[in-house]
Length: 323
Image 1 (spheres, rainbow, N blue to C red):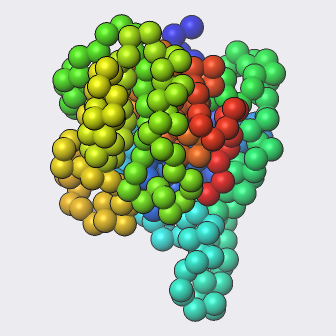
Image 2: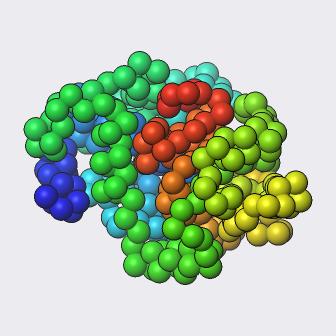
């Protein structure tokens, strides 16, 4: 069975479910936070017989058409404009400075009316706590239509990433051009070292903590560095002169700060994501990935290539990180 045939089987199965979730992609977080949660919500719905529909209009990373700006169209899309203002992550609703009565009207009465009128059972905020629950990481799937027989969550995510991480023609061509600018041997390791605003979220690690396992896993002292701060590359090259470090990070990039990023114009954000996806594809091609699971790219990499090809400094096992 080809990947396209498998994906069509999923879409047919998904369409057969009577209950519906409309999941909002691209609300307020970095791309891989958005993508990881989309994937987990999709799998939760699959497990519980809920039709998964994707709303990606008005995303903060969109050029014109959300998901479709980068990928082949998702086979179960929803484009109803009301989702922009009423379909949110629950903590966004909780942190809103709207008056209590206004929040009650918007997120209880108006959303209830929308669901009733259009036959919708759940919005993003309704099931968020379920697919974000750490226990969901231990879920297995038995779905004969998809070839799943007590299939662990991580194996299921690999199937869906393989099927859904499918660029459209313009973005695929641009990403291929970017990846071709990096000339690597057949075997290399990859390092994900984030700077920028990551220090506000979690523990940061010294370069030497990455290089200890890098030395163990590398046969030729060649690494691709995925980072948002070119200072990282400069310091690695200075401290480890016997190594070859490759990157797509530009010398002008000195750390990713999400609040500043979302204020950029759409074209700049689109180009940034093309570069990000090229870097993630190169990273996924490495013989070993070294990073952290408490970052969303690291969590994604564990899902895409499997934990056996990952070495993460913060955990021996893949974890469903808490936001």
